[in-house]
Each structure stands twice: as structure tokens, then as C-alpha cells.
Image 1 (cartoon, rainbow, N blue to C red):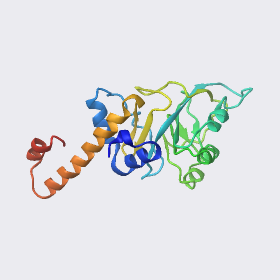
Image 2: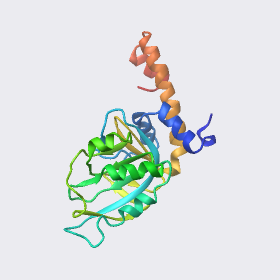
Image 3: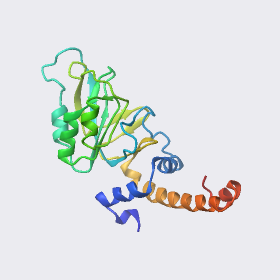
Image 4: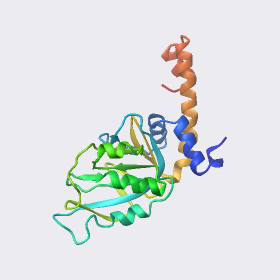
Length: 222
């Protein structure tokens, strides 16, 4: 079945069941998209968490002290989340928690499938008990209300070296988080599935005694 014939949740189900970030990253490299992994410090808050969905991008900026509108447009952004989306935030520079218990509950209620923040999270036990994939720089309880503010969403953002548009695919697992630009998603997923399936064949051949040199010569993957 070709990826171009698979839409919506089914496409992401195939990614969840067969793909992993290393093989997708290899395909992005091969296509010339060599800066698609978010910074390596952004990790799942619990081992085994995976996320795949379309980005709803969110932009934060630094503030100092109490604000007339605490958190800026945060609640507006949360209330605009759609089913199957991933809340993806470019955080402000001042260290503070960009995600927590109530945001998790709101995102789940909206049908979102995960959150990835270029910053910290808090309320860790309360977030974990909701069984919702969250990727962050780590746990840090300092409040964001007097330190950062959401200024825009569904806009272009930049996290590390990665330029991200709302609607791009966010894919994260134990090895990190990457972004698949929507313009090339069909080709990336199709080629990644082929590579992943080939790697399964290569592993089987090696386990049956084939040398890695011969396996690479025959299959072209390692």
C-alpha cells in the first residue's frame, strides 16, 4: 500500500507501528533535509513515549514580572488545538515550565496527541498519570507566568536549527524528535518504510551468519 493512498490517522498508525526516528532521519538526510532533528536535550518525559502528528506551532517570548494578560495567548492557542495535532512550542529564553498538568488535560480533551516544548515541564506525576506523550528539556517547576508569554501560534517557528511550519509532521521516540516538512512527507514516509523493512531483512541475514560487509554490499543499508 502506497503512502499517498493513506490519509489521516491511518498514515500515522503506519508510522507508529513500523517507523522510528533514526530511519526517518536517514531519509531526510538523503533528500537534503539535514537539519530536521530538534536539539538532543528534548526528550520524552517517560521511557517508551512516542509521538506522531501534525504540528500546531506556538511562539513564546520573554517577559518580566506580572503581565496584564498572564501567559499571553496561551489559552487561545490551547483552545485551537485540533484532533491529531501536536502542541509544538518555541520557548522563551528564561528558564521556566512551558507545560504542566492543566495544559495536558486541555490538550487531551481537544484530541491532541502530544506536546513537544523547547523548554521545561512541571507537575510531572500529574502529567504522567494522564498517559499523554510529552517531550521537553526536563522537569523544572519555576512558573512561566512572570517569565514568558505566548505571542503567536500556527506560525513559523525555529527550534535549534529547525525551521517549522504549522502542519509539518512531528515524530518523536526514544532517540529524539524530528520534523518532516509537509511538502515532502509522502516521499519521506514511503522511503522510510522501504528502508525500515530492508533493515529487518538485513538483521535477519546477519543473525543467520552473513557478514556486515556482505550485508551492506547486498542491501546497501547498515
